Amino acid sequence: MATVTVTDESFDKDVLQAERPVLVDFWAEWCGPCKQIAPALEQISEELGAQVTVAKLNIEESPTTPSRYGVRGIPTMMLFKGGQMASMKVGAMPKQKILEWLNEAGVAA
Image 1 (cartoon, one colour):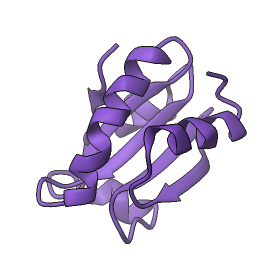
Image 2 (cartoon, one colour):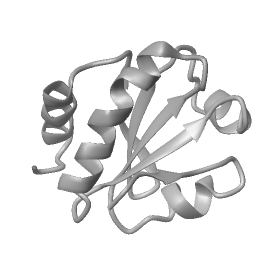
Image 3 (cartoon, one colour):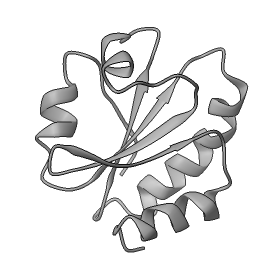
């Protein structure tokens, strides 16, 4: 399953009301580290599509949601479970570290 795009308008329905955990990547087109982790997030989405939805939110096109959750630097990844933010990581990291973080947060690989 490929990553999904979420916006300020779709965030409540696509993330907060989702039946399974959602990993939201807050990113922007001009952000180098964001582009660096994009392929890893695509792979994770393909590999763990049954356990977690990987969503991308462009902070320039949808500025309300990042400010609501206090996003100050990008890339910021937040894991939402049952409508609540369960865990957060800021900065680029390799795929293995993202998988370890997800595992620690209860999303089994």
